[in-house]
Image 1 (cartoon, rainbow, N blue to C red):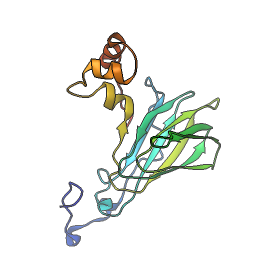
Image 2: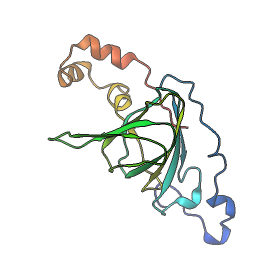
Image 3: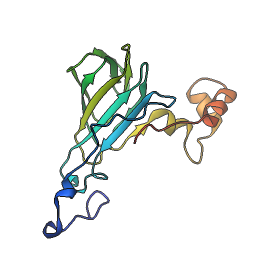
Image 4: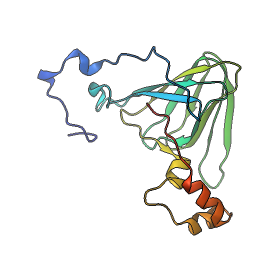
Length: 183
C-alpha cells in the first residue's frame, strides 16, 4: 500500500496498467475559465505508482487560463505545443517575487514545487501545452477554491481582515462558484 493505492502484484500486471489513451483529443474549453486540464497520473495509469512522474495536457480557448494553483508534491515543467501563453510563479514569503515569461511554440518553463503559478492564453487562437510533474500524485491546490470555497467556510471576518477588505466582499467571494477545470 503506497501513496494511498494498493501496489499490484507484478505477476498480475498487464500492459493496460501502463497505458493511457486519449491525450490526442482536445479538452472541452467551453467553461468560464476557457481551459481544460487532462491529467495522466496514477489514477489513470496504475503502473505509475511509486515511479515519481505524471503528465497533463492543458487546452486553452482564446484568453483561457488556469487559476493560480500549486502542486504540493511536484515540480512542473511545461512545454507549449500550440499558441502563446503568459506563465508565471510567485516565490515564497517574504520576497513574493513574480517570475513571468511569454511562451511560444516549443518554449519550456519550470514551476518549482509548492509555488503558486498560472498560465493564460494570450494568443489569437487556442493553445495547447503538455506539463510533466515530478510525482505520480502531485496534488493541486487551487488558491481561490481553497480560500473562498473551503468546507466548512473560513470565517468571513477572518478573511476580511486577512485580505484588508470588508465582510460583504468576502461573503460574495465565498458564495461564488469556484470551478475546477481538471478532467
